[in-house]
Length: 134
Image (tube, rainbow, N blue to C red):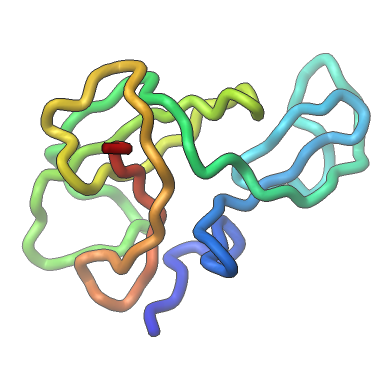
């Protein structure tokens, strides 16, 4: 079974979900998870609870990536362009970037997408992706 490309960013059990933290003082969500303090500049909180983030969101923006991403992104010998989306998670009031999968060529801003975790093209690592909701 492939291993996560970055440990602690997501889970597949029982369902795919991104893992983050929520500040107990101000309610700000963080992804990736924060360990020491709230990143909200208006907050000095240090109590952070582990949370799973929403698995559905809306497309805030998207584009085709035409260059190879740097490490720790898994590398392959033959690079192929891929879609990348900035997805707004309404409950968390945050934007999360991720690759696109499925039929995304006609994707529009505001369309709904859902989180998937699947093997990267290297076959050795798992990554999260956003898939348009049919």
